[in-house]
Amino acid sequence: MTGTLQNMDAEPFSAARDLIWSVTQLNRRVGQLLEGHFNQVWVKGEVSNFAQAASGHWYFTIKDDRAAVRAVMFRGRAQAVGFVPKAGEQFEFRAHVTLYEPRGDYQLQVDLLRRAGRGDLHEAFLRLKDKLAAEGLFDPGRKRSVKVVPQSVGVVTSLGAAALRDVLSVLTRRAPHVDIIIYPTPVQGLDAASSIALALRTAIERNEVDTILLVRGGGSLEDLWSFNDEDLARTIAASPIPVISGVGHETDFTIADFVADLRAPTPTAAAELCCRAREACMGQVDSALGALAALQRRVRERATMQLDRAVAMLVSPQQRVQRQNDRLQSIRNRFVRSEPDIARLRRDVAQSASRLSHIGQVHVTRQGARLAGAVQTLEALNPRNILGRGYAIVRDANGGIVNNAFALKTGDRLDLELHKGAAEVAVIDIRPPVTPG
Image 1: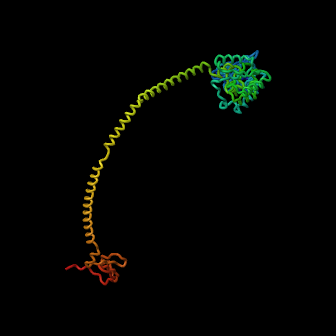
Image 2: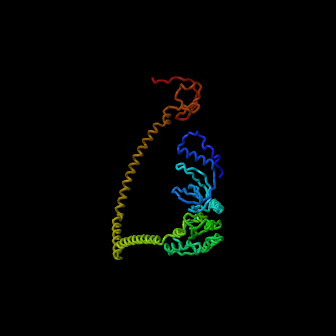
Image 3: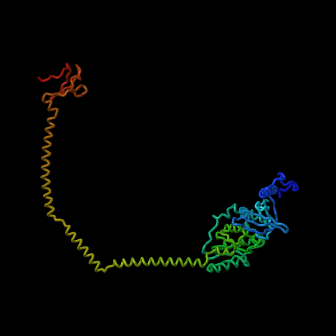
């Protein structure tokens, strides 16, 4: 306890003596005083009236031989414990003192518990759990899938353990077809942890089973401590064969449970989880056989239909030859009908050639007449012929045609192209054109 109530004989409240408090106000004030004066305390006592609510919170009473106090442990803290307390067990509780206002009862809000006199053991459990969790040994992605229909199952446990009898009974009833190989080992005592790890490694090295069951019955923390061994945990994690742990009762948790590929609440549950029941397998087989029979029936029906179509298409050799002869005669008739009349075609070609020759001559005559007319027109428009009638083509010094006397100046040099020959002249005078009288 880090805080104590001081001056308990003094006035409990600083308010006036005649102030009237409601019950709610009083309880709230008392709760504030308790929480203010008690920071954190360790309390030793026995668990009784334990109840786990649907929310995951734990409600119980801590008592000794002379007194009792109510306590609560909320789900987040309870999940970190790793086991569920049982009535009558002694523990050391780290808690805060609070007041439950609706009833006016003070209670302890527990955030950590350890077995009385075995705090070091529980602390070692938590340290190893945190260490292996940080290394990823508990990660679901690392864990192997358990074979649904194994051929053989290995059991690592004590030959005299009740857990072995439970496992054998369940497997004999559910899966008599599965072979069972036992790897005996002590499961309790000073050297039990190393013996369990050795038996597990033997099963791994022999590689003769599909799944390994690691089981033992319930017990105290000390009884189950062999399954909180670091070497055993690493052997389970490194196993290529899936490992199912079934250690203790449903409320017991060990390091082996966290690192195993599958955790069963009891040895019996481990036997049920390691393989599918024979009845379920036979049901699957029956279903598969029914589906196969239906498939065979459909295949047979399709084959029968194909055979019927093939029979319908089947003919005798004589019929086949007759059909071929009929087809050949049909082809011969079509060939005869399509054979060309050479004499008629020659007459048609001669007539076509005569018509073509006549058309060609007419066309040539017409085109010759049109050509002669065009030649005459071109001759009439030929400027050289015009020059023969006394006309001339006048060009300036740049070779351009001169057709306007008023664009000239006296002294300009001009070239005259005549019907015969050419002459260079100079402009002496510029006057208007002479109008014929």
